[in-house]
Image (cartoon, rainbow, N blue to C red; front, side):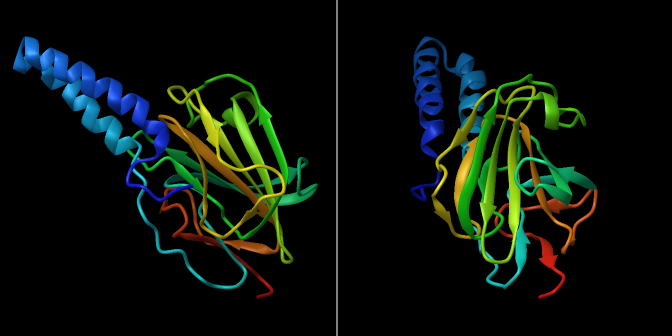
Length: 212
């Protein structure tokens, strides 16, 4: 993905709102304030900031910006096929919505699941909402990261596919307008965040392998 200040998926919204704002401003300047404000918000929403990616061995970085909603132990049956630790991150409409690879490695698994659009903070979204999962593997570990659509977010965007190599912290997709992201890691990864913590995609270290 090209590193531009605004991701390309945002430009159709920005151009349309700019046109509406211009037309309304021509009719009456004050009437252009609502669409102009929405234009500024949408431009802000699709921002694409640079991040300083940590360069340590055996770490897992956050796949998204947002608020840690839960840290749990589960049985992950899609890719890890065993006990795992899962971190759920809620993204509000004010968070950066670009997802980044939590580890470096090859995409070995990919699945898109159609579903509902329940509010992203509800527990059942992980099994009932529209979602897109990637299984990433390297010589040290396997992780499963899942983009989950929310009440407002109704489109998940992915720029990668099975067989692609990802560097740690590399942008791989986004979710439009409010959502959540989950990551499942093996039990030998110590989770370094807790419920209520704020994290930044590609920058916050959320886990570290215990034997490193």
